[in-house]
Figure 1 (cartoon, helix red, strand yellow):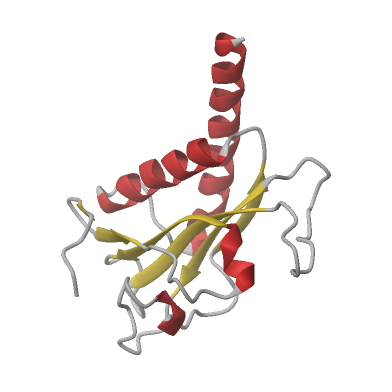
Figure 2 (figure 1 turned 60 degrees about the vertical axis):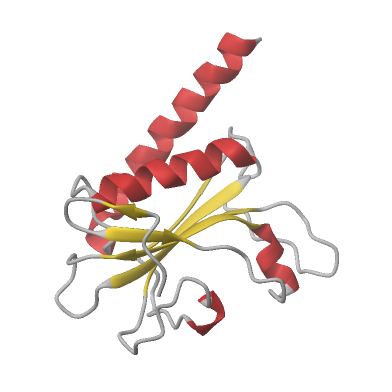
Length: 157
């Protein structure tokens, strides 16, 4: 496996690139990371991703929890079956239910990718956890990021 893209004080993470042969529905992926760390007793790998909710030709429209929803952040615990190569995400097998599945709006693709990277770094440095007990924490962080993005848009106007 390749060297992690980020190594923090408690965990490490790899940026995941979309494979050339990715299914059509994965074209909505803005950014994705594989995280490895000691945040749960039974597993130690998570997929963390942001996808856009725009319509894609030939793909069923995304379910939006509210009309302005533009993105969804997902955290999924991965099965401890050894298939955790960041260059082969098609082999990931995740557990159900998801640790997190939250929709948000008010950002660009670049802002949502940057936000996700900052969240991954926070996890790797021990400031947060990808585990499901942090769902409320992540919702608050998304709300704060949306407020920050709204302030950035106003400052540029």
